[in-house]
Image (cartoon, rainbow, N blue to C red; front, side, top):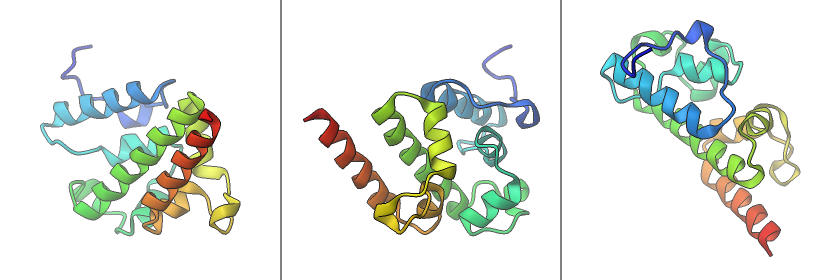
Length: 139
């Protein structure tokens, strides 16, 4: 498969590493000629349905297919990637970070999940929290 080949989001599964996930997103962007994160590929990697992704990003579901480049949607996707990167840096396991992002409530944030926090625009609070955990683990 060439680097230009389009990735089919319907067959996509989360890779083992964050780096590979970003490479897949880049490959998808290059194949379409648009420097944007493919929301369908992102949703598939996180086992999200498109309606849930649209709700998290505060956009209409139609936006995911007709206006993928909107700043609101792309901003949410970039913020989610930032959190996933930080979480992967702490534990070294991208798939664990995916599970954590979607499912684990954080007591410091009133038991909201990371996904909910990003949706509420609290990405920087969450990243600072993760950095403090990493700093504490380092000494």
